[in-house]
Length: 91
Image (cartoon, rainbow, N blue to C red; front, side, top):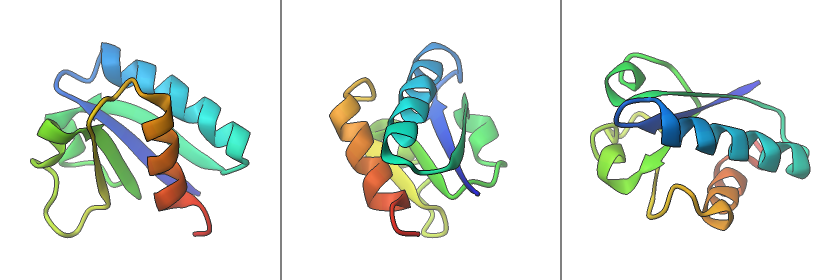
């Protein structure tokens, strides 16, 4: 099963809201994936198939080894849906 990690600066409010939205979207799409949220520092030590966070934070994780999506607006469900489809559908 794929693992999606939602990342924010402190790993609290916004990433938790995005986690809930991602789970709902994945269920609607029929894609099975484990979704959790964390802070930036912890995300550097956690393994995931997809890391999602704000563009400003994701530049800190983009090392060429991780599958990273930097969103312009974390609360935009259409942008989140597109990121999930682009990176998880058909894999």
